[in-house]
Image (cartoon, rainbow, N blue to C red):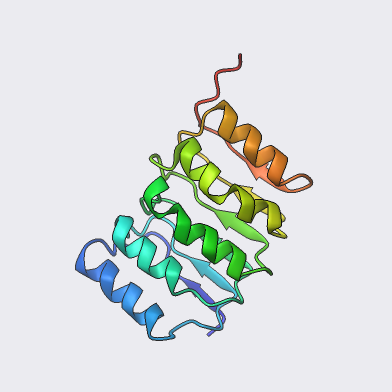
Length: 150
């Protein structure tokens, strides 16, 4: 299996844990494309799933799954493990914020991303600058954040 799109399905609570367990058992270890946009995985399931992702991903969309500074370490490890990752979308994780960006910034810098989107993640000025510094030459979408314009 190389392509999996489960976007806009609800896997909260017990269902999120079941999805995470599948990945822990090696399901999808050859995935190149994974869309989990708006699956409501929650903090615990998102962390478990990110921890168990393989290393062949080129596209990952974890938008709307309660990514927070608490589980940004697992996202950082997933980025580093997937050196061929070209597209990363983490939109609408409104608790991720600047602290989450700081948590993944070194992984972003080491990545080969061509597209990064973090719309509506409540990122402030310093976090936005950190993204720009880390991903020079990359398509970056940061619409709907908390930049002051000052």
